[in-house]
Length: 210
Image (cartoon, rainbow, N blue to C red; front, side):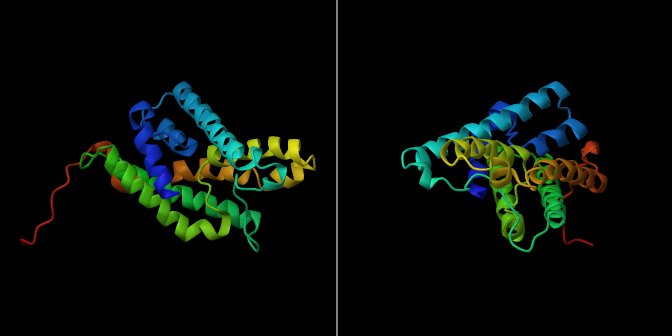
């Protein structure tokens, strides 16, 4: 997953500045220079992109094989023993860590290029996944979870015809949508409070001299 994010960053860097996640875009709308209308267009595009990706995966892994191959490889869910409250707290926490890390990586002190950002953001996602993935699958992005979930709902209805609301959405679906949108700006705020990137302070190399 970390490598997937890294290549996604490289592919989209010149187009959107690698805005792949609504939580990242919201953080830039609040603390950066992202205009609200542009930010909303980015968020809509992120959701549509996630849906198109899920559609292609479904065609490849389900449509050619039949409805029996349909299972939830689309979206996250809490693991046994993880309550919705626990899952909400974790999604806020891990998205805050993600945005604090992204803010540090992209602070331009020292200057970076898309390969630096892609590599370090990919590594950051890998580390977060190893720490938090065992409880919720670490969505950290409303688009990454809701988009594929909507595609799963459509194909579940077509192939299985069961209770889509209970099977696909349940009581959990809103957590990976809402929690990252809280955690993202929280992480960005914590980074700004402790590092003051708006001052563009020069970093003085450490030396051993007294």
